[in-house]
Image (cartoon, rainbow, N blue to C red; front, side, top):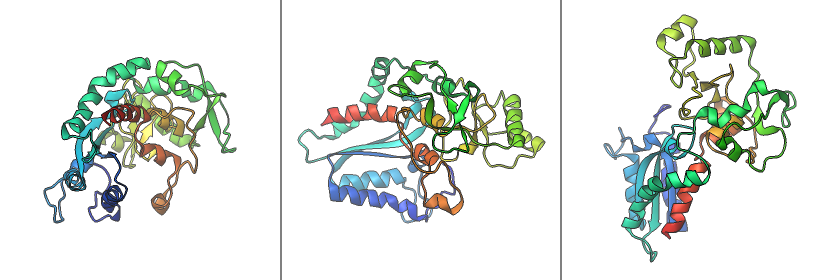
Length: 308
């Protein structure tokens, strides 16, 4: 739904690479995730009028799999983020327990069992952004970043929600991994504070045309976040979002919390990159922005395991 959506982009051929991989490996179970735009139709090529998802579904059926695909909002499964993705699951037809009815039941069971799954963890479907990251505020204090000496990293305060307690389980120390604060210029901080102060009625939305004209803001996307709601879908570009309470962008650890990665999960590599390097490098923000939330993955895995 974003970007240039160029059908001739060579990266679109990753779909065929996936099909080839399935044909070679012949896994018992398939679990496939892609962006919401995957259900959009081709415009120019020979499959005109056919959605990408339909092409893949047919090819996997031809490869010997019962398959079922559906759009899923991870926010409905306890993740503090409104993130809709196309999920496709499949089971090899020559497995004794396999059937189309069984694979069709995946999404039914996923929806039915989400409440009991979350209840066992002390969570609810309504977990919001403040529930997720309010213990990671810059106002809690900071120390020298363990992995980048010229930066400051945030110090934990006491957990303020069950979600935070779950994220911090088995973590030792007062600094969360990858919780390095950005070095904003004073004028950037001032601009961010103005946006937070004057956009109380447009949280989780891009800045209005009137606001942009008033302050001569030309950046393509700036979204001041709402602590009382789930985050909008986070991307690989952290400077698209302003923290709901503090005049800054989110840290890598806050990104990870929004995606439900436990704090014990350690990220490696550069924090960010730019320009042409974005096609060769996968920095920390990108690793998280492109991931499936572990909290949803766990629910999916339990159901897939039961199907075979």
